[in-house]
Length: 262
Image (cartoon, rainbow, N blue to C red; front, side):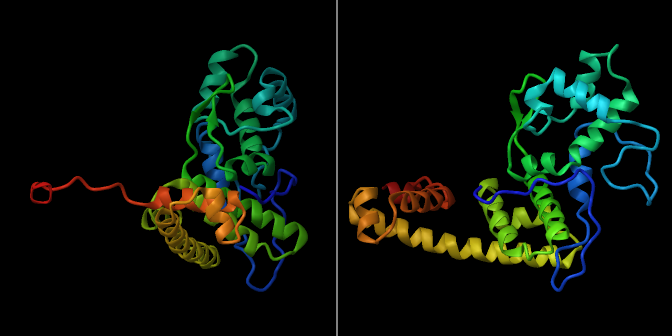
């Protein structure tokens, strides 16, 4: 992914009214991130800020402990956490970590912009040893993208839709699933978000058609990628990326029937 996501505070900024703005909230991002880290907590008051620990719970000492114990996960750079990491931490440190404090700390951690940025990048989920053990679900990538870009809009008031549309296109292509399957996973009741999604998928369809035409021309040319790119006035890497995308999207060849074989 090429666009850089912003670094912001762990709490949600107040929405800034603007024409065609992104949705005011994207709760799926925070809920999905927190759900894989800790068991469901009791319902919170509507006045409680998303990402803030329950009243009377200071999560920062616990987060400092986690950063000291697992710097590869909670240190200067964050990594997405595997499902059930809460139980893994309690089992590894039963006399060090207190259940409710850990739950609150993980809730704050997984709702932070820094953490959601790693989810939005599509990185794999990691265990306590820092090993990648699980692919990130496409819907978690998508909703984290919505939330991170919404916070960016709220902070600076800029129109983030072009950059968000590009990132959704990249996330869709990286998912490896069909358009219909992707829409079924991520489509929501928020029409503003759905509009950006539709635009991104339309752009992905147009790019796929161009890539397929380029691949056919390349196959007919008998040239190397470098020579082919030079013929079309393209950078070799750009041409190579387009050819790879087209190959990934091509359906696998069907086995010949008995009639065809004869």
